[in-house]
Image 1 (tube, rainbow, N blue to C red):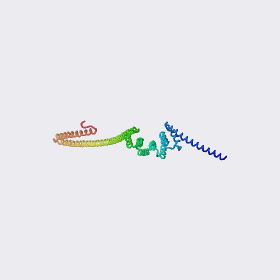
Image 2 (cartoon, rainbow, N blue to C red):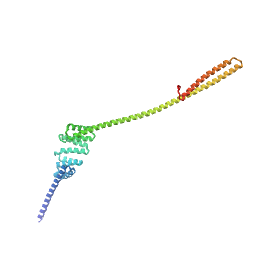
Image 3 (cartoon, helix red, strand yellow):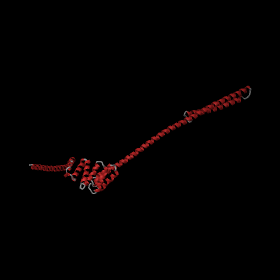
Image 4 (cartoon, rainbow, N blue to C red):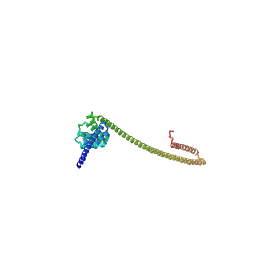
Length: 318
């Protein structure tokens, strides 16, 4: 009785394990098949979900399934997951014929993630190892793109020129030519910006120099005006002094004339009192002296008037 019971239990366990195994195999196959269907339809998000589920089963852990998973992740924009799966692939399937494609994709993914230095290293290794691969020109292009993104335009130009020259039939030849034109345009723009900057600096320098010269001119004009005013003031002072001197001379001359006239008049009175014949001579002498004094006074007054006119701003010609 007990033996029959254990036999039944054993049979049930064996049947359950077999059924579970069949179910697991069926589930793994279903996930793979559905993932392949989504991949074929370009439904990349669904493909990623189903293929991730598929590779979790041992029977689907192979190079083909992982390659499909990586490309699905790349197309869906999940670059970080794609990069991790590239490393898993290269670690576990290094003998696969798909290895060159995965190494190329890894370089592309690094470029997409903005890790340009690692992208250049990875793609350069690919080009060195697989120089006859059909993806060689594409790898060169993304090396150029990584250099371009890092502002290394001269190095990038060399790569683009090589693609155009050596691989004119490449799908990337047109894009490479476009990049060359862009670099040329950028170079012209940078030169124009440089010239504009230089011209602007020269304009500012010229403006500053002009303003400096203007300030100096204004300063010199003020100084020159001050100097002319000082000279005119001194000239006026000299004229005033000369006028004073002439007035003093006139006063002195008048005093001398008055004194001499008094002497002549006294001598004349004395001659008259003594009935001396000096009257005519004295009168003539006095008249001559008066005439001479009058002429000299007139000359002095004319000179004085001239000086006064000059002081007031009138020329002799006016």
